[in-house]
Length: 470
Ligand SMILES: [Zn+2]
Image (cartoon, rainbow, N blue to C red; front, side, top):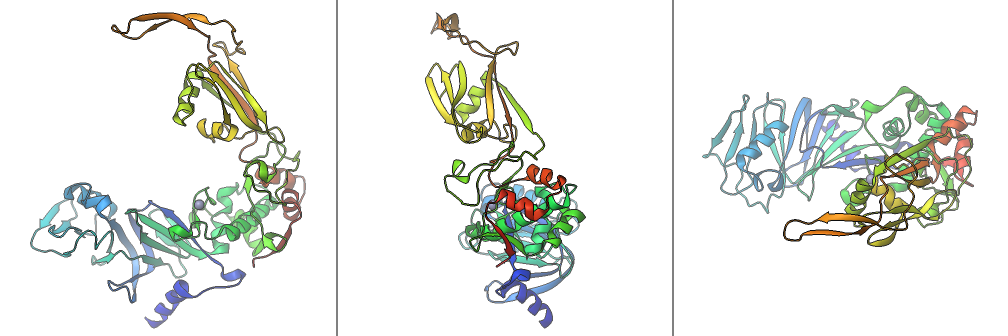
C-alpha cells in the first residue's frame, strides 16, 4: 500500500520539469453525470479532506454525481432515482443519498425496483453543505459518498476506460460549481499529442505533413497551457483548443510522427510560438492582424500554390438568409440585395452590405460565416450572387411592384408597392478556416512535393526555429 501511495503521490503532487515530464490536464465539462470507469486504482480524499485514500479497483466502478440541480432539487426524487439508475450499471445495486435533511435513503435494485427506506437516513445536512456529491459504487457493491471532492482513477500501465473511451494517464472527476461533473485527463504532453494529431489531420496523409502537425500541436499546447485554468485544467478536448479523443483514436502513422519529433517545438526569438493552423488557406495564408488584430511577426501571409484546390458553395433561400441574420440580431426585412461591401487581404472579405426594407446594414464577413454555419460557409474568401427562382442572376428592379398584404379581418387588406426580391443567396468561396498560420492542406501538398516537415514549418511560420520543449 505504501508503494501505491507513493506512485499516485508522484502523479498528483510532484512538480515536474523537463521535456519528458511535461504533463497536461485535458478537461471537458458536463459530459459524465454518471460513468462506468475501469482502472487499477481509485484515489479520493476522505470527508475531512485530509488524507488521500487509495483502493485497488480491479474492475469497473460506477460513478455518479448527485447534486440539487441535476437531481433532487429540480426534479422529483423518483425522477432523480431513475436518472441515477441509468447512470449506474444495473448489476450493482446502488444506494443514493438524498441531499435534503428530511429525505431518506433511496435504494435502487437490479430490476428497476425503487425502494424507499424511510428509516435509514444516511446524510443529514442542508443542500448548502452538500452542493454536490460523488457516489461511487465499487465492484464489491460497497458505496462511497464523496462530498464535493474529486476522485481520481489511475490505470497503472493500463489505460483508464471511461464508458467506451480509453485514456492514457489518469482521469479525475470533479464536481463543479455548475452542479455538473468535470472530467480531467492528466497525462504527459507526448502522450496527449498521440490523441490529438490523428484527430486534427487524417492519419493517412504524408508523414512529413503529420510531423509538421505534431510540431504545431505540441507548440500550441505548450503555449496555450492553462488556457482553461479557471476550469481546473489546461486545455479542453474540443477544437476550441485541440481535438483530443484519447487512446482509442490513436493511429500508428500519427504516433510515428509524434515520436519522431518528440520534444520539438516551434520558437521565435526564444519563445514558443502561437502555432495556429487551419484546414485550407484558399491559396494564400493571412497576416494575423487581418483576423485577430494582433500582429505576430511569424504569422505572415504566404502564397501556397501547392494546396490542392478547395472550393465550396453555400446557397440559402432569401427567407432563410433573413431568419439566420435576425437570429443574430441583424435587423433585416424583405431583403432585396446582398453584396460585398469591403475586401480585406488576399481575396478575403471584410464586410457585406445587406439591403432590405429597413435600409442597408453592413455585417462583418466573419459574423456572416457564423450566421450561415461555419462548417458550410467555410471561409471569408468568397463571392456573393443573388439569384432569381430559375437560379439566374437576380436583376434588381429599380421600380417597386404592386403587392397585396392581408393582415386579418380587423386590419383589412392593404395594397401597396413592394420591391421584387431575389429567391436565393449563393456564396461561393475557397479555403476552410481562418487562414492564419499553417494550412493543413498546404502541408499535405508540400509533403507530396517532397518538402520535409521542417521546410513545411518554415514555410508557414516566418523566421522561426525548431527547438526543444523549454
Ligand atoms: Zn479550449
